Length: 204
Image (cartoon, rainbow, N blue to C red; front, side):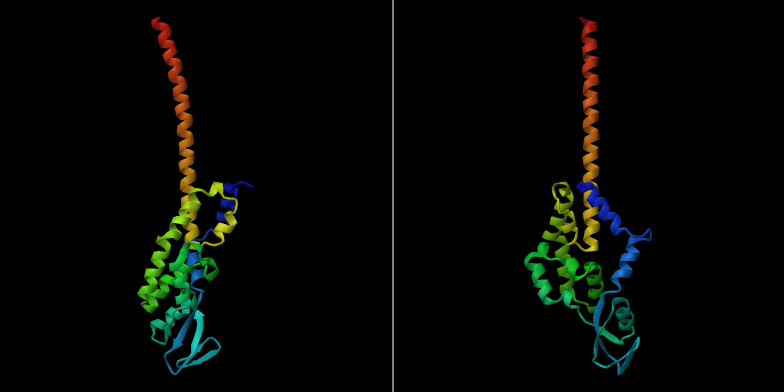
């Protein structure tokens, strides 16, 4: 099985629906559980009745709604905690972010908005723009030399996979263009050589 086949198969697996991927990704990201602290005397969440200062895990979409009404305070999830940030600062390229959340950056961006955690914002930006970004681009440009594409993709978040696929497709398009251009130059050279030969025979 060729690398191109494996990458294309992975892309098809990721695009499971004809519905807008961005919309699907946002919906899935909103299901991420985040901790909230209750700010009112009692708060009914589904079949649960939460008292003031009680910390509960609720889906991100619900946390946003409750926070907008000042019923809860959104806390920073453990996947964005100090230990993870330290690991990212020490070597972001080696951290398996997908195991923390397939939508790590999307969820993180919304957590920043809810908690006003500027340090987290800086951490996310540095992670995606630093060595990890460079490694993803390197993987995408040299995917044909790798036999462990599944392992590589298995460590990437959905946002990073989109970046990988974009780089891979660009590399393939560039290679195809160069191949076509090379064949065109060879054909042109052959035609030119024949024309030159005919011209020389005419003059002689």
